[in-house]
Image (tube, rainbow, N blue to C red; front, top):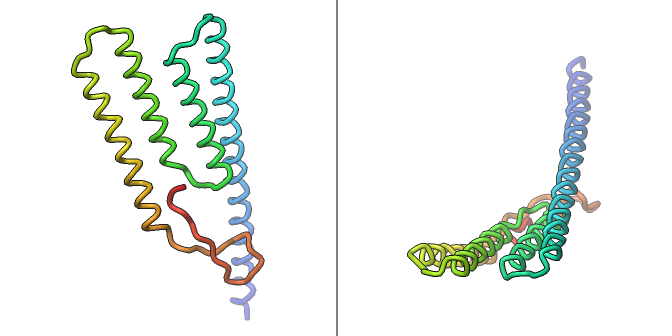
Length: 162
């Protein structure tokens, strides 16, 4: 009899601690996402204003804006789905390497072996996207209980990659 009240109290304390912990984690999660999204938007606006101040825009500048666009899209997808879109990180890397390649070729006249290395890195990252997309379509994550559903025993499919 005495053990039952202690076990009930333990379950209540555990439930309260779990709820409070989830609240703290989700609050931090949303605050961090808003901060990252805001900083990304601010950096993109500042880069754009610097381009306007220069009076001309180069391909490097346009690719930099695409990097900011991809980072913003990645934050938005993470905000909506709670899944880190790995493909977008690879897209950012491809765009950054392309920007480096264009900058290197346009500012340094004699192309050297670095151009081949950068091109190989871009090709390797493109292959990585192919592998990630194939793997996520062929091997989706397991079904997990849906915490937001009112139906008892409802399942949701947790996708590995979008």
